[in-house]
Length: 215
Figure 1: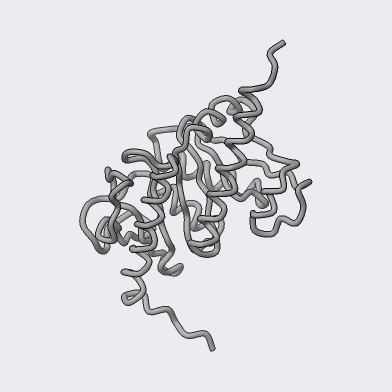
Figure 2: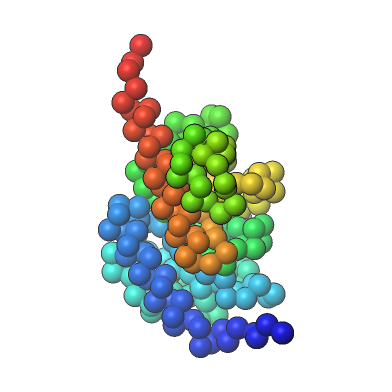
């Protein structure tokens, strides 16, 4: 029988790993200033997330900068308040049942989410790096990233996230227009890998577009 996770004893280590992730993403230009937020699922029933507190510079994240919240966004532990975008993490946690959810705010994800928004998403295909996404075995895979319009009505946006993920069960992430990338994984390591793969592919797609000859 699988031993139950000791939530209390595991939380400091997870917070330290999330803080290191945030600092790394800042150094890569994917979460500058206060942008981006990161979470791990502590428990599924009832849902408990460990998530970044709002308004923090990601270059100096520390374990103390993470909160425990429930599915309604209520703070159960830690100091500060969660970002309103915590409800998007909850939406992903419910739709995909991942172990970790990461949101970056890179230049390329922001630009491409604007440029492709009218198409409802962005297709990535033909790249060997696609095989870094869980379950993908060939560069011929077509990864479709849905693009959702940004909104200050976060509950409504969270509902759209759930609908988009149910409509696109093979998607490894999605973009919010003018706002950046969300992805997830069975654990934090897999989610970090997905960020690295998707950010690489978004930069390639963006550079190809920007360097293509104009007619």
